[in-house]
Length: 162
Image 1 (cartoon, rainbow, N blue to C red):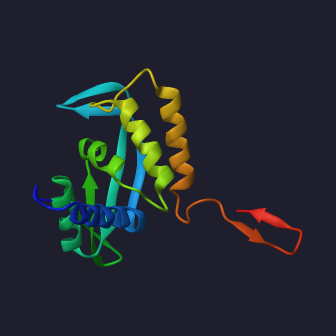
Image 2 (cartoon, rainbow, N blue to C red):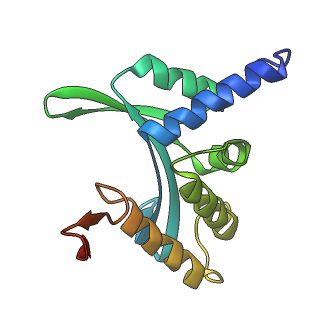
């Protein structure tokens, strides 16, 4: 976005970003217990907040990349078809996510912002391990294929959660 753009234009592009994350995006927290950096292994738990958007149309992801002023787009082949993924790094997540209002993934957004606050710049912490573990477990349940646990009606009085 250019500095001279109006509020309506900024709101439009933030809405576009929110819609892409809500519809085609993933918000998650990854836990890494051993990390190799510069040829050395570093002990401890590292937390990596993930916000990414997948799409078959690379140009739509390039718009997001320009809007966020960074991040990377990587291609992959899924079932013989090229699909692109835009990865939003944590430093950009910290700036962009507070400006967005999501519908489907609002709880994801809120929790990843909390995690970003607790992990700090280097994605490692010792002080907030319990809360980060809770957030991590929440994402494991809610980010599986199919979303939240579904309730199926098996007769009038017999409901089962699968």
